[in-house]
Length: 341
Image (cartoon, rainbow, N blue to C red):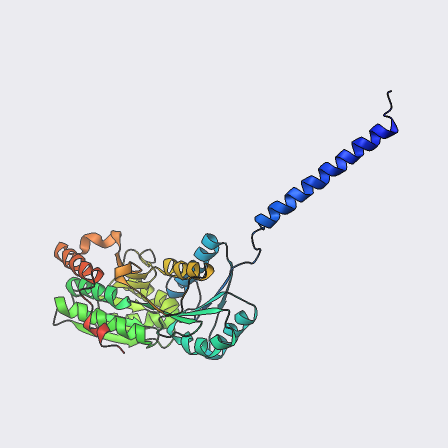
């Protein structure tokens, strides 16, 4: 075995140390020029007034939250709330936890957002079906009336009894507006049609929804436009069991809930709308305002059920397509919607 002499060994070790220090210095310099990405997680929360299993308003919002999670890598949270006190409590909780964006899904959340927003300036609060805005509070208003008007045109030409029904959860302004637009569309094509109008009083009671639908069917309604979230599932049940009425769904695409009795759905593309807002917030480009989304932006649309497409008169389809084109071009809107404050 050949042993290295002391001077030679010292030289080898010194060279190794110099090289190691140089390598470390190189890494430090690179790190200074290209700092590691921030580990701060984008955090988004959602409050819904009802269960996300409703296959409608709340389910669509939850899909939007999941779209944000998948597309933006966000950390997300969801809570179902019942009362105005809970609205404010949960808004405050998410603000104190440093969430970047909190959605309050419904007209009823806007007052709580206005009260809480100033206390948590780093959190953006967005309420849907709302016309409220502030320093860090925004409203998201959906042009639901346009597609409801088109649905009314379809119902007005398809009815055989000349009686239509509308059933809502509670009398929130956006729901009232959409029902007025539906009636207007129906009367344009059928001036003598009769409209039955009722509200369940809540958004969760499936049995009550079914009872309201059966009552309207008993009075001759053969097409019912429903906007009742989870309670609306009972309306589909009534139509399916009675075999005397057809249904028009709302908020989400409900054509698959009961395809044999569903003409179509007035759909809000909530995942697209939520993701658009969240992306702006994450990129620091969001400006609090009232965001209006409707037919012209393809966020709200009437989606017909292919399973029953053959039952819609071709002339009706043509008329609906023509009015839809006018809406997208900004040349037409329902009179009922324009009368709203």
